[in-house]
Image (cartoon, rainbow, N blue to C red; front, side, top):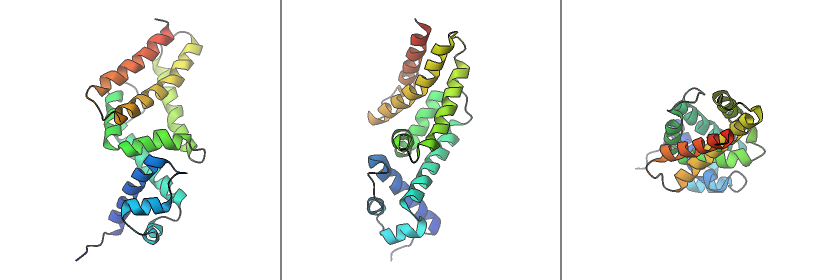
Length: 182
C-alpha cells in the first residue's frame, strides 16, 4: 500500500526538490516540470501547493533565508560569525547557493538579498574602526561580505574541506590588511 504524504510533508518535499532544482540552474533555467520531476510528483500536484513558479521560488528563498538567520543569530560580527556561516552553509548548501549565487543575480528577486547585503555592509563598517580613512573603510565594508560569501561557496564546492573557518577568516583578514595598507 502506498502511503500518501500529508499536506505539510508534501509541501516540504516540494520545497526540498525545488531548492535542489533552482540551485542547479537558477530561476530562469528551471521549469516547473524540472521541479515536479525532482520531487517525483506531477505538475498538477505541484500546483495544488503553489500558484506559480514565482510563488514556489519565493517560498524556497524564504525558507533558505529563515534557516540562515536561525543559524546565524543576530547581525553582529565576532569570532563565532564565520563558523556559524559555515554551519549554515553546510546544513543547507543548496539553499545557501540559491540565495547568494542565484537570487542575488536575478533582478526579480535581488531586492530580497539586497537587504541582507546592506545589513552585512553596515555590520562590517561598524566593526572596521581601526581603518581611519573613511573611503577605505567603505571599501572594506563593501568587499568583506562578497569575499566571505564567495569563500564559503568555494568551500562548499570543494567538498567542505576541514579548516574552512580558519581559511575563510584568513581571507577576511587579508582584505582588512589590504585596507590598512599593511
